Image (cartoon, rainbow, N blue to C red; front, side, top):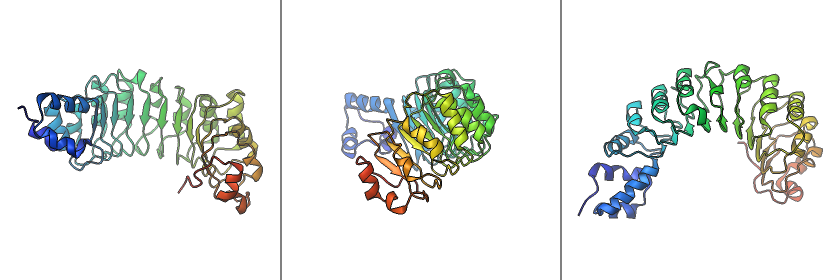
Length: 332
């Protein structure tokens, strides 16, 4: 009876397979091993694994070619461990918080993965403009759909973020060295845009990017974009037409310059909104709540909105207005 390779068996627990399945695989038939290998070929998950490097080396020796490779928060990992698993049919690579890899892995993915659709690089402190440039010059650049660069603090305006024409989701959370120039150059029609904690962006740049993107966005996170003004938001709304917007998630936490003046016309055009944070907006009034047009709103945070009397901000009062609410604290 054929047996599973000791190297493969050693790393299977890190691949999120059920313990009872592991016991059976110890004396598995050739067909059973083939089924397990097929599962790993579809999706290989070593997230949060303390020995991810060793696992990848063992699996690379088996010739596995997963379509999805998840390494978020993986430890004891090097660029040399990841690159053997990169191949022409890889569709998704998640390196979120895998801080021991950087430009070399991104460049290898750029060379080896022409069909790559999703790339997560959250909190990748080693990523530089050069890594993004390698990706932008790669065969996958025209078809890349999702790019997560949250916390990639070394990035500057030299990173060609505009080079991905089909991009749908872009996360630039806490990228303090990006300036207005990067926003002005964006060209793709996004469904998700995250500019969380990017207080450096000016009202003019925010107006420009919102004018371009509002019509297609489903999720918009501007938490902490303190320079966004009523005038900028109104200008973006006027430039983007007058029809309903498709926003389902909207985070305006600490956009402290905004008031009813711009938020009323925005919220009236959001019939599909399910998640809304207005946390810490001192200028909005109770009248704004009447502008909410979505019958499916399930999450609303108005804590810290000092111009709304405290009794009207409490969950019981909000539930009377919006019976579909289930969450009232969205920002810690």
